Amino acid sequence: MRITALQAQVHNPERVNIFVDHTFLLGVHALLVLQMGLKVGQELTEAQIERLRQEEALQQMLDRAMNYLSLRPRSTREVKNYLRRKNAPPEMIEGIVQRLHDFNLLNDQQFASFWVENREHFSPRGSYALKNELQQKGVQREIIDTLVDGEQDEERALRAAEKKALSLLRQPGIDYPTFQRRLGSFLQRRGFNYEITMRTVKHFWEAEKQESIDEPFE
Image (cartoon, rainbow, N blue to C red; front, side, top):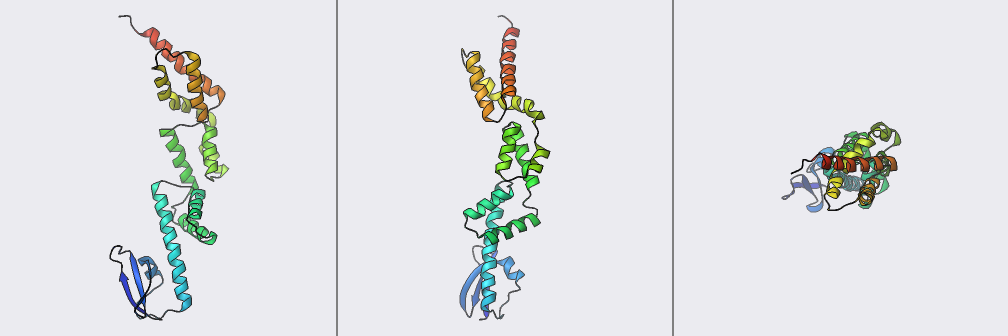
């Protein structure tokens, strides 16, 4: 079998159609044509064609993985689970993950740093919840312990509760037991322990009382 044409696809010039003996064989990524040194007039064996199909399948799955990573950083476990859902065989998954590691597109240390920073800015969590989230995503304990500790939980709780507390305090006639129950539940769902939760609830309630006292009479 001889390659009789290599034609760039009209709607996707990064892909090339391969014709063997004037008959369409398959379309592949242009990078694969370069990697395998394919050219018009070259003879192909059945083994080479099979390798071509395997490499193309690998490249397509690698492209999917890279698109998945383009949405946000991912952990190694997330990428593996994604590829399993796409029915990639185990050996292909390991090969893709290794390539992504080699390209530094997959790095659990960097992913964990991103995750913690994102939570800190947009949705603070207690250290227990943060650690649990990272563990579920397959991040190693050593990495988690370097990034998350409980010493900042008090500050995290204040930031996490601020909007919710102000919203509750604007409700007419809200009493302390109701405020405590609602804000406390909110904080505990975000992984803060009982002691920090109660101190945070008390902080916002007393701050509101003090503000009311300080308001001038009209």
